[in-house]
Length: 82
Image (cartoon, rainbow, N blue to C red):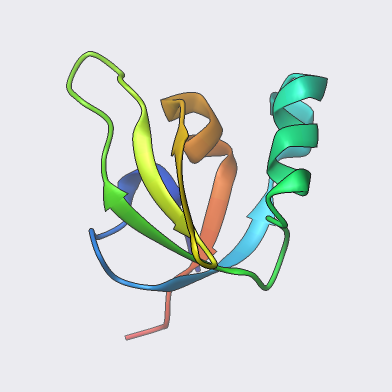
């Protein structure tokens, strides 16, 4: 089972299950790859985007970056089965 990073719990490390690269602009996809974001990478939602769709703060490795909400929605994280 997977969940979008934008809807994940705050401050809980998770593993990227997949990224919907086709929903991103080439520049957005390139930026994520430059950050080292791909399947199997650990990420953490530090601060969700605001109610108006503001950027989310996401930790990727030792970096904290701002991602637009639609970019965070394109990143799926693995959710353990309960």
